[in-house]
Amino acid sequence: MKFKASLTVLYFVTGFLLAAVLTMVLLVLLRPYLGAEESSLIRRLAMYAPLISGVLYGLRVSYVGMAEDLKLGTALKRGLFL
Image (cartoon, rainbow, N blue to C red; front, side, top):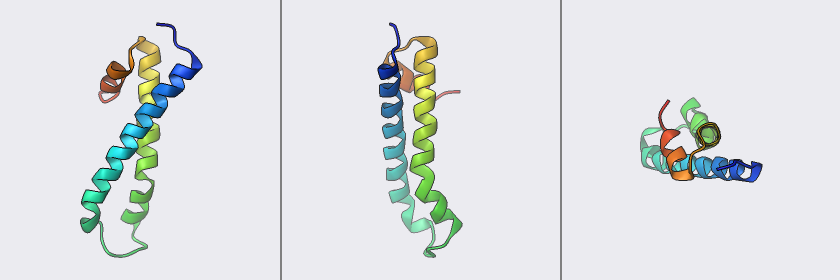
């Protein structure tokens, strides 16, 4: 399978959305334990956690998918492991 730029973007966006949504769900479940203060460092990190995890996983999925010529489902699975 020949990778084109559009396919690479699709792999990135799929990985990004999957990681960001799962991080948001996890943060909603952990919300009572994060602390009550608004200016807490933990709350600030939690605000950017979906973006950071989404970008990192999206880049990993697109890189692994391109480098090893994988289909999307396989690239998502292989992107989980280093």
